[in-house]
Length: 82
Image 1: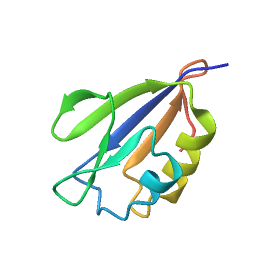
Image 2: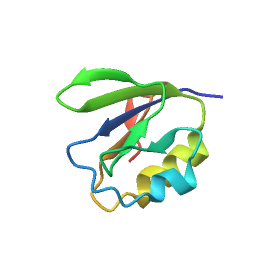
Image 3: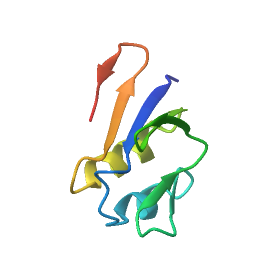
Image 4: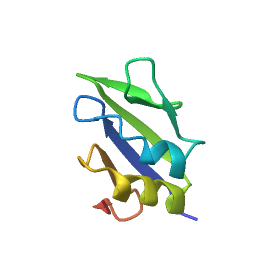
């Protein structure tokens, strides 16, 4: 099982919430109407990074984002999947 890097850009987020529905173990609603990436490292400028093994749910969450605020990178290949 591989590892995946999730990059979340909170500035781009519009709070649609599809990611919360599809991946509630990783995304949670925030008080500001957007979402939080749980357990993520703050990269500054409202960008956050999380390393996870949850490929299926995180890919679905990223694909569902209407503003592409979520990027997923396969750490084995360094290839951006979404």
